[in-house]
Length: 380
Image (cartoon, rainbow, N blue to C red; front, side, top):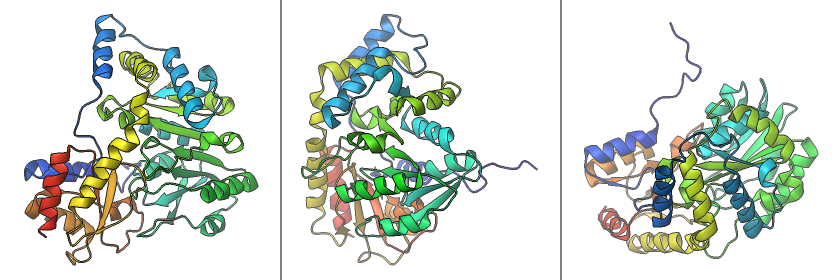
């Protein structure tokens, strides 16, 4: 009998819920992708470069012009001095960057601390590298990190800590005291950091995104992962990047070249044009999504759901304790099949599912979609 390397994994809840949404013609607020299209300039330039014959391999680390635009963006947003050629690697989506970063540093028997609820790609990548995930639970409604608990979880085998800010699925962002505590642990225990910052440009209420790139000392031990798909409403392009210190980037690229070698060349040129010519898109992203967060929240204000704070990302959590006694997986199935709205149960983001009655909605949708979904939810 074939022995699986990942015996406990099946079809993801995201695919399940999107499938059910299609089956029952439900409003799909489950899977995290925008309902609206990518910017016109991006699409126009992609077509332009395809027609110009820019369709062969790019350099493995990325098109130099795009690497430089990424470095310039890091300088503008975080005052970070990044060497584009040596420190920026373009990847086929942020998930590839996360996978490669984990493979770069994790060895057999190494431990990696992750915070639950966590993006579901972390643990499989750690296990495929021969490592072990050490899960630290963040609890509703605040999902704050107790750094004393983190300190107590560190052993002689601890190799790295994965952080995600703004955080999917909770919508929380790390605060200055979190970065300070993380930095102290990294220095004391000689750890690495993988910083998942794919929602970096989507923070609300004028709260800044505290990128690891802002701190030279912390960045020296870090891989910072970003996503063009989240930033430019183009998740299907699977374009991301990793910024790392030159010595870590060298090792990262050794593995990257045997995972995808290089990423979609015409898209890289189009993205470089987008960053160069329409940088204001990034600056306007927080306001764009804050309006959608507030729209959905306002139309749910008379519902029986309790709205949990969203400080960033394009997700909103709802506590449904006053609506149903079902567990969150059962409730999400009922919700899509009987009410016609697809959501994600939060327990699937945990190694050991809690009993919290919390679901996640994606508000990267057109306004009328959000209003229609809210009207249905208000009737429950």
